[in-house]
Picture (cartoon, one colour):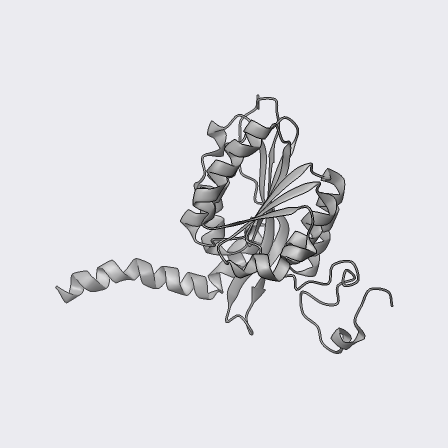
Length: 249
């Protein structure tokens, strides 16, 4: 069997077996569905310039680097450069907080006349952090179609952040789908948490002429999983906290 380590055929999960091990050997925190969707999208786009927010072990970077001419990889972990720097000749590593780096980087890309056509957001997973990264990235006015992929769109905190952005105010935003690739509900090893999933945003050079909406093609699946998840319990308890304080008074 080509491209598969036989050792992983002794168990089953959402990540394995994946027929990508030969080409992309670095540890990759994406499910089979996400990996194949991610690879196929980049094969189609072949971006001149790409941005990655959140590098970790370089799993997604190894794919972006293969299909993009140039990549800016942003991470707040300084060890990323030491661990991965020599493996990617077309990657410039930027260490620090994406909230500070991205606005300056976008301006630098504009000043250089570079063609930004792809970005991955997989860094700060708080609602505010996700929303800020999106807003900073969509401030770029594209000269060609510009695709933004967001990991963990099935996670309630991340999904909330994705929905906080006022996309309709930006006429270059033509498409937002939170369930481009569905995520997973993990009742056992992740204690009823919801993770994974890829959202997809498309910006175009021409201004949008139609009304705008955020698509959630798997909204029913998301709602079913959410009601059974630990996130629902935590959110409910958070909602009840003010009432508890009131009764204590």
